[in-house]
Length: 163
Image 1 (cartoon, rainbow, N blue to C red):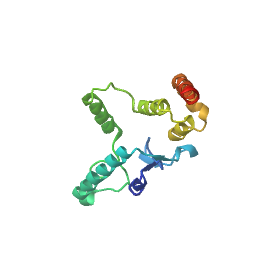
Image 2 (cartoon, rainbow, N blue to C red; image 1 turned 90 degrees about the horizontal axis):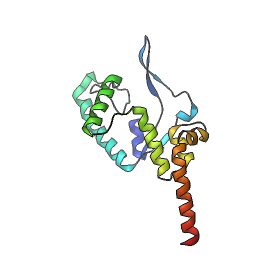
Image 3 (cartoon, rainbow, N blue to C red; image 1 turned 45 degrees about the vertical axis):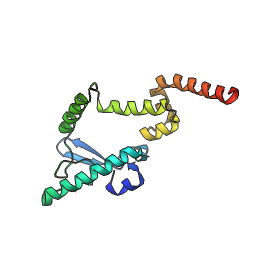
Image 4 (cartoon, rainbow, N blue to C red; image 1 turned 120 degrees about the vertical axis):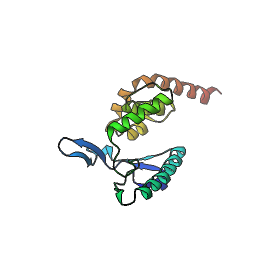
């Protein structure tokens, strides 16, 4: 997400950072067209990102000529990309501090999709958020949420017709 886009409350997926043997970290555009997308962000997250940006601007001033501008939302105090191992250690420490069981980072993606579906967000929208190419991928992967959605639909129909 580029800093210039935060004003509209959205995250734009433009590139990924991958470790390539013999080359180190390399920026790459997403392979699939569906992976290039813009996602609306909840207002509290936008505010947290604005506060983070202000803190990062202070880091940039402190780093002076050592700052490397990679146009990253999350960076080391010198502007360089955060190392994967460092990020992993920090995340594990935050999970321990919050007394939350350890899960893979990718599990957060599954949690988000499950919560969106449980909140009644249409599977097509969840598909777009996840960047799936087909809705079937989303509905098959999150099949466990579908019975609750069916119950919710039946309850809504009952209220519409009999309440």
